[in-house]
Length: 235
Image (cartoon, rainbow, N blue to C red; front, side):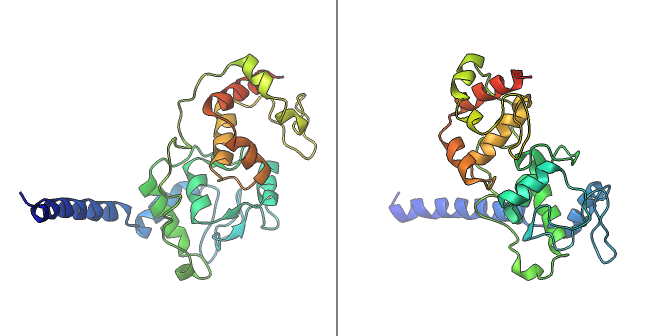
């Protein structure tokens, strides 16, 4: 078989795969409206939208976190906004997957939306309530395709307590071992999943705190697990 004869079936197969991928990633705003019904327990959107338990979601894209007046935001969400968290197609996708990806201690009692297609459809629906929907990308090539391990992963390495204590010195230069919260959030007594999810998010650059990003990127999964075990055990 000559080279051209080999190339044709490969190209055909690649074309089919690309077509399938595009079809799978197509956004459906009408389906997103149905998915939003779960969000509507706490959030309004549309012409008559008001702030409720959570802020209204009109003009959500490109809005700074915790920036609407007269909304009772959690301390954690206010910190996220102060750190520079902006709601974009990327950050919303990550947050909706699991709110703890971006904001540990958020008051939002929502376990997250694991399906990428569901998140894409929901975001397509919310785009319609922006000032200029045409200026908001429908998808992101960088973060809508999550790199492994998933931030919603439920399996975590077991951590070594003594190793975590050894590594903790860098953490405790800022965070208080006794759990006090004076300007810098407490990390004492966190659940292991919450701690690991937070450090993974800094490591991937999803949480916008340059110092924490730098620290987390130096840590291996084993080291993150050890720190999580150590700080969970502190009272």
